[in-house]
Each structure stands twice: as structure tokens, then as C-alpha cells.
Length: 428
Ligand code: GLU
Image (cartoon, rainbow, N blue to C red; front, side, top):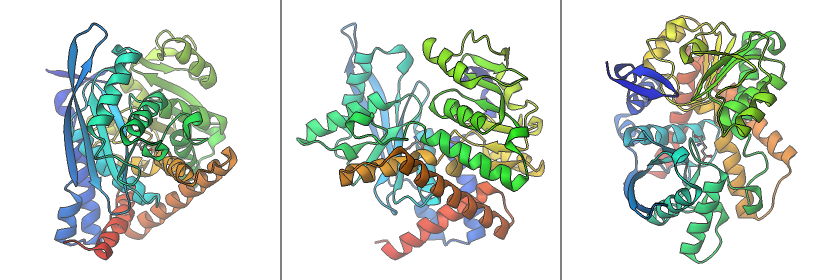
């Protein structure tokens, strides 16, 4: 059987569902409940713009390499489009399209005045030098200079990209325009106009959502255990912050494998190890090595998938033992798994709500850049926590009203907001 590599663990190819199809099936379910008209439906399932670029980059060995890149703008009804850029060896158009649509819905759920977009470059950032990454990033920014813009489309970090890459985008765009334009990109380093609290924003939102959901389920964080899949920015910080709230994090993972400690993993120590070990948990001694599937199906109360898409599928959903899943990644649960999780009574706080803390603080960064005035860390945290609490409550109440899952409720909130905006703005 052909195998594909996802997060270090082989999955049979046919298990992986097309992420855009996965998005569509949830969209359709929510659209049916809302009874949206056929025209609105047509508009919302068609991304507004799909741009493909072939980027030519001079590599360190003197040869030229061509990299495929995309930027998909799903919608601009709520404002300029917003969304990260992913550098990954297997990124493809269908994935970028799904991620762009999720950004539209995510911004609508948390009431941030942005549409949705996503970018991707097919490359392996782990195997490229800093110079090659810089030239690739500048090539991408120049190729898209007429598509992106502080009032058009604002990129940010995603899987495989970081504040340094955002700094190069800022610089390349500003040089192309002839003036400094910090609001072109968010997730920048602080000295370049980044926002305090942006680095930890997604993990913080995951923690706030997890606590809100635990409250609804009557779970006490101090008597609960968790498994966190993925140890990048979102996974590691989510693990750290939920551990600080008293949750015993028994399992973590990265591309090198999964790690289990029944007494709870010392997360700050694991983070130090990861940083000193070339961004890898490989060889981590504070826990015993287990498989990725074992982590997902482990006997814990809370599961936080914070790696990549399609990790919880119809093939493993029935084995999941957690009572609560809080999605740090985008699309970690395939549509096929939703029904199984629902029938098992597992509460799932969906990606477009749970990981929306990142884009929320990106919005704060954009606002601060445009004002030229910066907020304290305390202000950022307070505002983010408020947005996450209010959004969770709104989605929760919607799920009660329509007697549906939190995922479908989040889509209902998002589609309702975008569709009513579209109606007022009109279509020509
Ligand atoms: N890549 C992040 C996400 O998927 C952040 C996007 C942003 O801040 O614009 O939500």
C-alpha cells in the first residue's frame, strides 16, 4: 500500500481526505441549517482569487531552483484578506484553498474585520540555508507585490515560517513600494513593529478555549490530563499554558515521534531540550517513546492536535479516549471523523474557534502598526482573552440553539456573518 508521511507517522494514502472537500462538507451542513440561498452558497464555496507563482531562486551551490508557490484569497467581504504562509514539502493548491476558506470563517467567528487567505510554497525549510530561505521569501514577496498589501491581503506565519521570514517580507515589500509598510505582514519581530503577545497568541487562545470547554463539561483542570500532538509554536505553547493551569500533560510529539510520561512531562524542560536540539524532541529523556497513533488514542481527558491536517480520521476516531478535543492545528480532524466523535459524545472545540487567538493578535498588530502606537502585554492578553471567551460562548450558545456540534455551530456563526455582510454590500 502506498504510504504518505504525515508528522513522522505513515498513514495509508486513502485515509487522508481532501482538505477542501472536508471543509466543504462542514460548510454544507451549516449552510443547510441556516438555509442560505443558492447564490450565496455558490459565492462562498469559490475562492475569490487563486494565484500560482514559479519562483526562481539562486541556491548556495550556484544553481537555480524553481519553487512552486500559491496565494489563495478566499473572501474579502469582512475586510482585507488575512492568513499565513506555509513552507512545506507537500503543500498543494487544494490544501491552500481549504486553509484560505478556514481563515475567512475563523476571522468571522472571532469578529475580526478581515477576509481569508492563505499562501504556500512547496519547499523543505529544514533543508535550506538561511540565505536560500531569504532569497525564496523575497522572490515570493516580489511576485505577489500587487496582490498583497496592508489594505488588500496581509500575510502572517504558519507551518514552516517564523518572525524572521515575516521580517524579510516586510523589508522586500517596503523596498518595492519605496516606503516602510509595517502593516503589510503580521507576526513580525518586536523591533520591527510586531505585537507583544503575538508569538504565544495561538497557544494562549487554545488554553483559553480548553478551560472554557472544561468549564462546560464540569472538568477540573487540576484533575485532568492531556496529550498534545505537535511541538511547534502552537503545540509547545499550548502544552506549556495548559500545564500552568494545572493540567497534567502526559504526552507530546513532533516529527521525531511521540513521548509519554504518566507523571506528567516537564514542559519547560522539554521546550529547552527542543530548542537546544535543533528544534527536535529526538532523544528526549524525560519520557518514554510511543507512536503517534498511541498519543492520539491515549487515555487522557484532553487531546490537543496541534500539528497538521487529517490526523483524526474515520480510521482512528472510534479509538479516541479523550472527552475533549481542542484543535490547535487547522483541519486536524477530517469530516469523516466528525460523526464518530459526535456519537461518542466527545466535545470538539473546532480549529476555526480554538486556534483563532493567532489571527486575533495579528489583527491587534495590524491596528497598532496603523496607529503607530503600541499596547502593553497586559492589554494584548486581556483583549485576546475577552475575544476568545466571547467567541466560545457565542459558538456554544449557537450549538445549544441548533442542537449541533461546536464545529457546525462555529460554521453557522461564520457563514451567517459573512452572508449578511455580502447581502448589504451587494453582488454585481
Ligand atoms: N497561520 C495562522 C492561522 O492559521 C495565523 C494567521 C494570521 O495571523 O493571519 O490562523
